[in-house]
Length: 127
Image 1 (cartoon, rainbow, N blue to C red):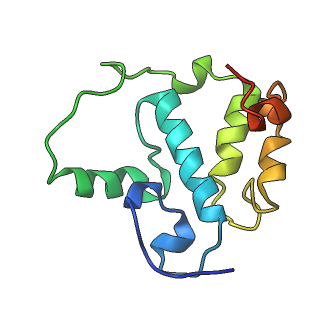
Image 2: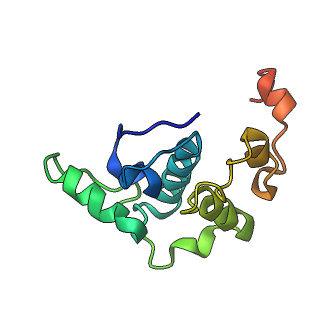
Image 3: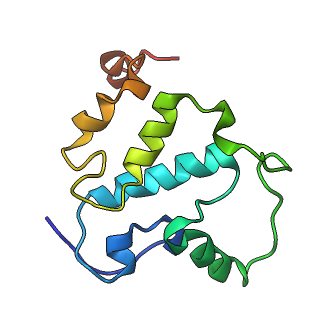
């Protein structure tokens, strides 16, 4: 199912939503990719105008401290190749090529999540 419209914070919206186009559930996978990017880098991605969109929204809000207090000069330095590929694939600008376009099983099968016991997690047996 497709929908159109804007809801939420612009910095986490995929290109197809920002342009006013139709979008599907891949919207959420894109937003997850932005969230993971922000956790890894303590900053929003700068491409596609995301940082600019966030700045516009943040102008009216009080300033907050960054997560770590400082930003890394080499943000991908501590991320594994699989982690980089996971975040990049979630944030693909083409919704049909975005990780998750084929469903959640596609995301769960990514090498970055290879060590996750999905059955145990679903059963609530993961600490």
